[in-house]
Length: 94
Image (cartoon, rainbow, N blue to C red; front, side):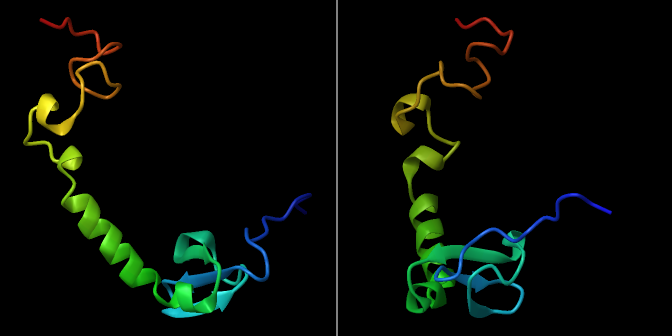
């Protein structure tokens, strides 16, 4: 018997959009992997997919997210973590 049972995160009064059911739900009714939120109202939760679409479009049009630009155009520097020529990669920079 498990000493601790995993409860669903969230609180009543918080609204979520359930991706599995395509419905607005109050509180933690479905697993976190299947829901978006929390939102402050059921109306906001009902707009979750539209909000996500708008944010995705905004990010897709943000020049900082495009790999085909030079670091100077995107506002990045080669010293940022995760860059192929940055510190900690074992590659010397020119």
